[in-house]
Image 1: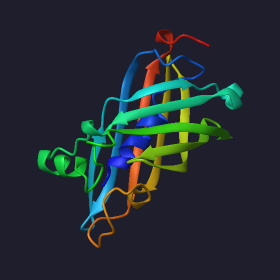
Image 2: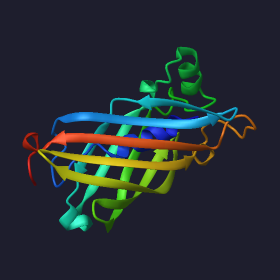
Image 3: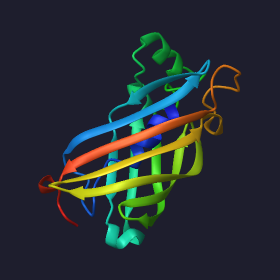
Length: 183
């Protein structure tokens, strides 16, 4: 279901701005939402692992690689979480990680950017576009992005009249500037 969106959100943002990824996040959230019987259902993925080198002044040299463990999937319903981790959906026993690797970045306007990423989930890879904002203010840097993916592109679940194919993923990650080491 919403598992794959969580992962993309995860990868997009273990944040930094021209900084090494060893920095301390002050907040990090990867959430997802999908419609089930027309009702929005959501959840989150934790344990974001990332290597980030993002410098707005040098987008060609910027890179982001991230992954999340499917076993951290949380929808506040243990039974549903186990079903989502099963072979029917994420198959966490065989594909425990969802990963994201940047291809390139483009500056849109102000603090808005777009990144092309290779998203790999359940053994399938696809290039996706993720719009995000990079904010550098008052002692912190922050990434915020929301995007949609089609769960069927990654073999997560099957075609259903009840469950939407589209999943919306949101990533919000912030770090203290003084905690970061400039590259």
